[in-house]
Image (cartoon, rainbow, N blue to C red):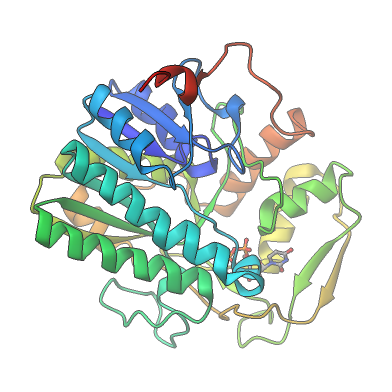
Length: 342
Ligand code: UDP
């Protein structure tokens, strides 16, 4: 199929892009490169542009005869969303509306959307199934839920089909060690712990040890980025206009922050400097997915479910790329060049 990946130079988007290319699809990344990395996208597969630019997306979808859109582009940091909700509503809600409008204009009728466990908010019952009430507690979760509503309403009115994936904690790096997680402004646990290990940060801050969990630190469900990529491939291949589905993507097991830290120390082979500090606003104590629906309905089977495998892959990449991505050898196609004279 011909696939258009917004945010296709980002962490999860680029892992899916590479996976889809490897499995015989024709896919291009559309990314503004604010958080994305050119080096994460194979040569000639990148169109540089913003999801605020509906015309550019519609032109690209038309000229590339796109069959389905995978919409990854988003702002995705919980703490930043609390400080700057305006940017989150603009990127995640208006941005999604722009993607849907470009699809309408160019006649694309399938969308796969990257949503999040943060749309559920705080719940006592774990693991979380897809029919748990969606009561987000932070702007990141609210904006992703609003985007889900947009997609559902557009799909019903305009004959589109959608798959919504609610990711739990996307983590790890390509198993081949060539690609990994590299953001300008990192807020996630595993890359921050490994940044301390390579000497790029002085210490890891652990946000709270007074939660009601086995060791007092937060429990999360870490899911390998290659397993997310497999779910996207299965969804793309089975999605038809008129269909509407939502799936949790997690491993089904919970791991505490201290257990992640121990796994990181085991991978790197030495202690990682850390300090326990106050809770971070908006952090639920426990988030664990029930992934049964995706397994049953898509035939999804996550492969890298042990936190040591996940952290090990992240470390293989970080150890060999302490400075993250460098410029790739092959030039990208610039959107201005592609659509010059439009
Ligand atoms: N965390 C932490 N220190 C950090 C970053 C994260 O203790 O520097 C904790 C955070 O409180 C949460 C878990 O690690 O319990 C995972 O956080 P992350 O930001 O990676 O993902 P989130 O669960 O917010 O999507």
